[in-house]
Image (tube, rainbow, N blue to C red; front, side, top):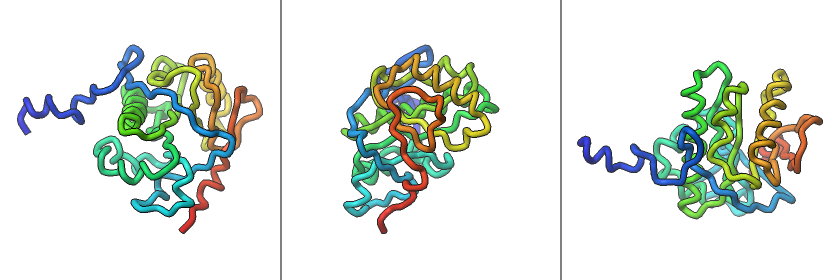
Length: 207
């Protein structure tokens, strides 16, 4: 591939969408989802031609990163598969505290870029929000419109409850979400309009 064709390749430049914040994070616009009975299945449980029962679910990405890395590298390949489902949470690329900040920023940007890409193809998307230390608060809430629906997960956060709640409060202050889909048992201290999704129930797919 020549330098000119590389510069014209949208998957190399990745500048097709609205952006937000200091780091020009792609913007995921708020969309409406009926949150009265949210049901999720893992991306690893999706199929190219799934049955009607499973298609009524939303899809979450609260699994190991290697299971969905290809979505960012080759987004068109899984577009038909994911378009079957009711809605999609954006991929939860890791933002671990022991990652250098440039890696955490990259994870947030990839999360939002995939969401913006899906929305550009007509899919319904809910942004997944994650954070690490307070240093990450400068960018980890960018690329998300205020007063919308967001998703978080408490899985793996029991031993770092204080850090999680610190970031959660910062998210509420920055985004003022109308609804928070919480994958995993919420902490009693969590405020807001929380919709609890049992992570164990999400493993029950119809095959």
